[in-house]
Image (cartoon, rainbow, N blue to C red; front, top):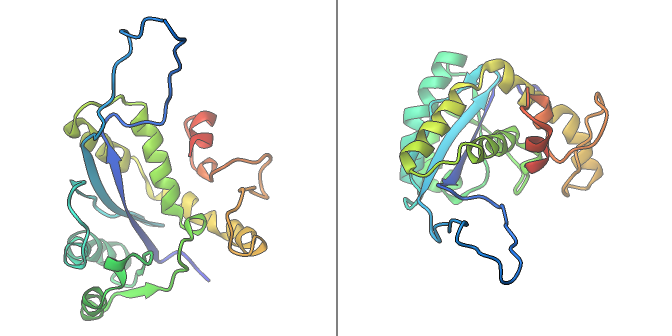
Length: 220
């Protein structure tokens, strides 16, 4: 199967000042120097797609907004259809997961009206979806920025996205060729990725791009 015309999309939520870091303090020690974290930090919902010819426009909206079929189709009409026409002359194939908004009767009807071709995708298969690695890399980038406002968060997201060249997207997507046999061997289960063309084992395929550090690779 050739993946060169597949356009992979995903939506994700990012929170301001949210990380998985922990700080341990001995009993009786002064903890005034520690800064508390918001219990319910502000979040942004992000939608985007990658292909061998680059990225779609981003759709960014408040994390409290529910992604239903109508909103999803509005995003596709704004961000996907135009890019598909420009980059693939309308011959791209849409790769989406099995979220309710993606598979509803309303969405199916709209996709048919737009003559959008889709690729059937197995449920719960992040190991096969290169854009999952993009989100992991983006999260690592955002964590390093120490952001405090939703405006700063949105700017960081857009800055990262603007740096995703077609060449970088191609490296993410090409990795599926050597991951597929691993997933088959694992009978569809999770895999520890080992690129047969490189030495060592790591948790993600971020090494397929120009990763910034070994720490970032292992974080995702």
